Image (tube, rainbow, N blue to C red; front, side, top):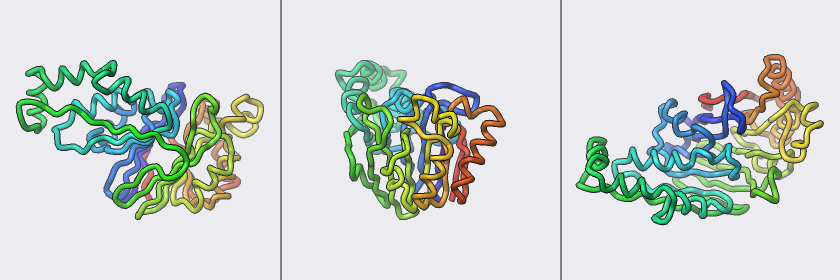
Length: 287
C-alpha cells in the first residue's frame, strides 16, 4: 500500500509540531525521500525508517529548511551501512553538486570522518558487528545530479518530473515534483506562490502535497504573498487540478493557535471537497 511519511511539515522556525520539510514516499516497494530539513534523519528513525533504506533523495530547492540535515543523513547512512546497500542518488537544482562535493568527497570538509570510519579498528569492528564483511569497509558513493524542468529520474515503477515554481528566484532555483507511478500519482508543490505550473503538477493526482503558510487574509498583507501560498489559494489550486487528496504543509506560527488552525482548515475545505490532511511532523498518510 502506498504511503506518505511526513517527516517534517514546517518552516525554518521550530515549533512543537513542525520543523523544516522532509517526506518519505513509500511506493512500488521503495522509499523515495523528498527534501532533508532539520532533524530529518532522527525523525526518520523514530518513524522506523532507517536511512540505509533510502537510495533516492530529491530536493525541491536548497533553502536551509529543506537541506540542513543533508550532512547528517549522508554520515548516518554511511555509518550504519553494511556494504551491500546501493549507491545513493541525489537530485537537486544547482548547486547541489558543489554542495555534495564540498562536504562529501575526497576533497570535502567532512571526508576525514570517512577516512576514520574506513580505517580505524574501532569503526571497522562496528561495521562488522552490523553485518559488514571484510577487514575494511567500502567508501560511500553519492551520485549528485542537477536537474531542470522535465524528467528528473526514473526507477522501478516510478518516474519523477519537475516544474519550476515561484518562490525564491533569482537567488535560489525552486521546483515542484510529480511522481507518476504504478500505484498512483503524487505531486509536491515545494514552496511556492500560486502559479499554473503547480496546478499542472497536481493534475488528477491521487495525493497532492501543497504548502499553505498563512491564512489567506494574512498572507495578502505580507511580503511573502509573492513567494508563498495561503490557505484559500492552496485549496483552490488543488480543486482546479482535480487532485483526489490534499496534504497541507509548511504552516507557519500564525496558523498554530487553535482558532487559526480551525479557520485555516475551513478556508481550505470551502474550496476543496476531497479528503484533506493538516500536516504535522511524524504523521503518516496511506491511501
